[in-house]
Length: 113
Length: 115
Image (tube, rainbow over all chains, first blue to last red; front, side, top):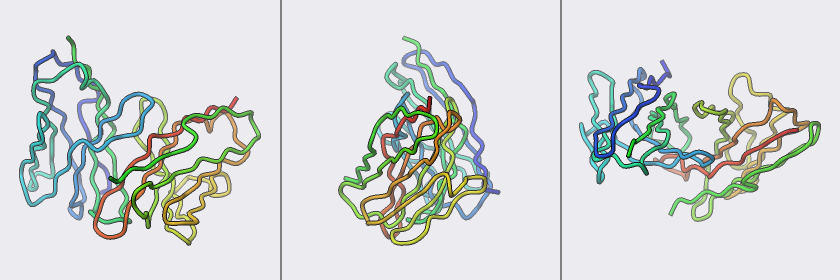
């Protein structure tokens, strides 16, 4: 019940296109859903996060869509750029200082010029 | 704000030696710190959770005598890999969380290579 399933494993998108990564969770106690961006040799950086009281959150070119009833959420990257090429992890947790973050398996995104 | 640092950024050591990795929260007090290990092309695996002044809680399958964690202050946690072997080579990442409802803030990671 602690799993977060992420797909696809890898994704290639043309520059200017829309990148879409999907995640599903099982534990209904989760109330915080962050997305992390990780470049090779670097730690994960928080990209954008959503709480379950809203169905969508947008920050610049990045949008999270959240479907509470389906227990699914997705990341959309609009106007994808070569600099967006990285590994993206979805995650889920309780919004608490002591809560573990459950990570998805990651998506390697490549943006072709 | 919410910056977490790690030191060193990379370390190479001989098999059988011990290596200490530091994790610091630079602009907040971290009541809880977490240590993760990440193998190439894989996700982050939580190793242990530590609270300031108390013993760390290790995840199933993580040897507590091999991976010693000390959280002596609200801004510093250390991970010591004892008697390191080549299979311990990995990317170690820490995160820190302030008190109250909040999330974790991740450090830049430490690349450990055991020869």
